[in-house]
Image (cartoon, rainbow, N blue to C red; front, side):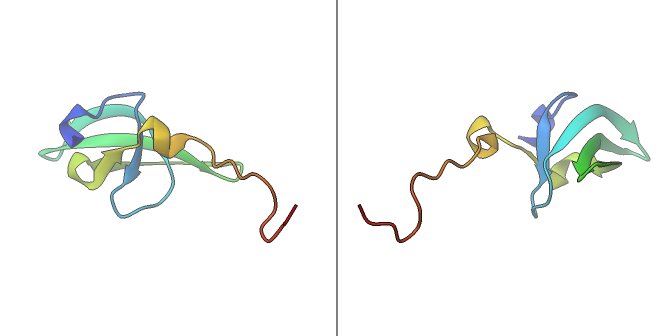
Length: 75
């Protein structure tokens, strides 16, 4: 799936970490890399990663977790 990564995709390192937005895909030093941007709090970060290190985050993985009720609550 890494060959399908393109600008605008939401990705994550296969080892975990924050969700990142791909700003561009380019060849650099003989490897194809994705330039990614993400936030931690209100601080913006960016770095480039070889495509084989990334996975595209699917819509289900990006959906917020909705919890109903309270743990241990009995009606």
